Length: 521
Image (spheres, helix red, strand yellow):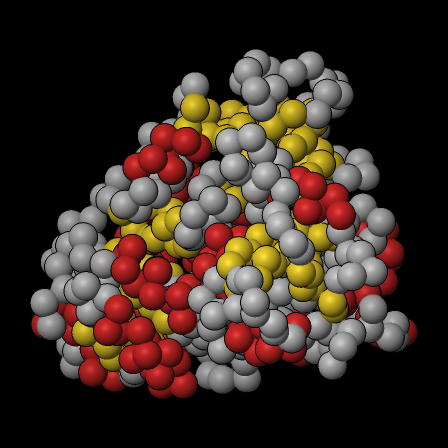
């Protein structure tokens, strides 16, 4: 059964519940979702589960537009909730399963969830911060109470214009921002993979990234749903298991992110590494120093793309084009416009010059609607009718784009965007800390990753060990956000208007006076 591309481009169908229902009618007993070595779930089974979840949510009072938090690790239950919530016309609020403390309470305060479904192991983290919330949600630590006995279709009218998802991305001068993602925006993540990587019903996508991020849920699971293929989900990425999993599950396509490529290549090479069904790996990014080795070792294509939660994936490297080291591709111009502009004037720059990457959509509602309950941040990001990514890049004469670096003061570690503001907020809770400034320093691992460094000023007359500061962070923030490097300063460098000069702190890097948490324990 071939893919009907004209049907896929009809925006009236850009609703996840409609796509799932259509595939269940056409493909019925074909396997769709599989978690590790568990029984594959067919399109019909997943569609029925979506109806049962939607009906169960409706019974407890969830209505069109209500926000439902999902605080779960990778699992079939996560997918069932996503399908059920959106089928009802409610809003799926994706919560990072590593969040705790201030990070978690901020998301729940901002999202205003009516209910939250969490993993039993994560329930204590939710209970810990419920008292901080002005309107605490109803909390369920199991999917079972939300499953209705009936799998009959739900009578809910959902449009591609309706809000489908809120995903949180890092802040710099403030807390994490909830990206408002309508149904058409979510769909276009998947459609882009189908069209640019020629995904078909015969493909099997290997998903080892967290489902609470757009890369796994939309680029991988949703694209496979659109194409009518099969998805294999594992709990988390493991460099040592990666190629063995792909071989065991007969996967034909997967994605890597940041340092994943480096970690995979650091595993001992084996003669059978290229004996697999992989045809393509999508790297975001694909480090140019590693791509040739990766392609030869695993016998597959490795292509790069560029995107972010707010702007979708507007750049894909063409599948049949000769390699261009470091290029993240050309514009997916059916749906997007991309420019490189002077970050001060917003004037477009000529080929070869480095500026800020800006993006805007060609299709209404096929793009982020802004940030939830943060209108000033929405206005700041949208300037002169373009979304400003905060990323530096360049374009060559042939229309290929190249990511160069980040312009904004943001930190990216282990595939996560980290809010420097939220790290600082946790550290200033320590009784000895007067001021804190978190910055990115370059990691020794290839893949465009950072390590977190924090510069601290202590209150007069106080003393504290670096070990005590690290121990203060560990239970109060996700592991990926805990700073690796700590440094004490007499004062933080400031501008005449009293803004902290983080550029100077970044430039200082790791000095002789810097304490390395990983090298000291």
